[in-house]
Length: 550
Image (tube, rainbow, N blue to C red):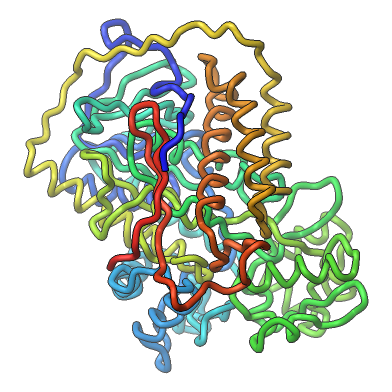
C-alpha cells in the first residue's frame, strides 16, 4: 500500500558551500549502551565522532533499573535463555538473531566485568535476579536497581580511554545526508557551533527510542523518536513500528511524571493487587505477576476497566522494609519522595509506554537497507524481541549489536577506503503560507491522542481517527522550516506517531504488545507470521506485510 506523504526530505535549509564541515571515518549517533559500545569498537578501525543530543550520560540506558539478562547460573544455558526469548516473542523473533545475542552476550558481560563493571555480588559470586517471562534467575544488576547508571559509568570510562574518538555533546541530529542512495553523514545543530555537516564513511544510528510520543511513559525527555524519523526521511526501511512495549508497573501519583517500578520487584516476590485487595493476576496467567509484560499490562488495563480504579498496587510489605531498601534503594527513595512507606503502604502503579520493539530494519551485521547506514540498540529492529521483549534483554542487545555495528563499520571502511569528503548538497524548502500552530500544544495533544487511541488496546476506528488527526496537524507543522530543537522534535514526533499508528492499522491481528480489540486476543496459528515494513519512496509512504524469514 502506498499513500502520499507530505513531509520534507530535510527539515532545515542548508547549503554545503556555506556551512561548516567535519570529516570522520565513522559517525556514531547516540550515547546509550549501543552507541557507546559501537564507538569503542569502531575506534579500533579508524577515527570516530560520537554525537549526543544532550550530555553524554543522558540516555534511556541511564534510567534502566532491572539489569542485564545472561545465562550464567549453573542450572541455566544459552538454549534456555533463547527458548524464553522466542516464547515471549510470540512468533516474530528471528531464532538466529536470538542465539547470536544470548551467546555473544555472555562475552560482552564478561568484557564489562574486565572493564570494571560493579555488579552486585554475594562474596565472589554475581547475584542473579528473577524477572517476568524468564524461567531461570539470570538478571545481573548493580547498586540494587541502578544497573543502567553503572553501565553508563563503566562504558564511558572505557570510552574516555579509547583513542580516535571525539564526542560532541548537545549536538542535535537533524537529518542523515544521502547522495545517490548512500548515507554519507548527517546534518546537525550544535548548541555552541550551530549547523554543521558531519561527513562519514560509515554512520551508526543508535539514537534510542520514542516513548515520549506517549503521554504516559517511562522514557526521558530525549526519547522523541528522532532516529526513526530521520531514517524514514532518508529512505531506510522501518519494521514493526506498531510494536510498542508498555511496562506494567510505573509509579502512579496524579500530577507527577511516571517513574519505573522495576520488573525485578515482582521477580523478588511482590504482589499485584487491585483496589479491592484481590491478587488478580492468577485470573490471567499461571505465572501471575511473573507473566510476560504484554499479559500483565493488558490484565491491569482489564482490571481497571472492571473495578473503575485509576491504578492497581504493588504490595511489598511482606518482603520487609530493611531488605527492600537494600535491594531497591532507588525505588525506596522514589517512594519516600511521595510519602509512600514501602514497609507499610501499597505502591500505586499503572502501565506506561516503555520500549520501542520496532525500528529501523537491521540484519545480523547491523546493516540497514540504506548503504552506509548501520543501526543498533532501541533504534533498530534486529529480530531479537519479536512481538514482546523479554525483560533485561535490551541492554544485552545494545552491547552485542553495538559491538557488531562497530565491527561492520570497520570491515566496510577497509573494503571501500576510509576517505570521505564534502560534496555539493543543498536543501531549500519553500516558505509555508499556512498558519503556524502552537508546538507545545501540538506535542501535548499528540501524546494524549497516542495514549488514548494507540496505547495498550487499539481498534480500526480509533487508529483511523488518529491518522486523520495527525495528518491534519501535519499540514500545519510538517510544512514549516524551523531553526530550533523544539520545532524539529515536534516534526519528528508527528512522523513517528504516524508510523506507529499506520503500522498498527496495517497489522490486522493481536500479537504480543499489539492488541486489537477488533481481532481475537491471540494470533491465528494457521496464518503465517509477518513483519509490517514502512519506507519512504519519493513522495510516497509505502507500507506492506513481509513474511517472516530467518
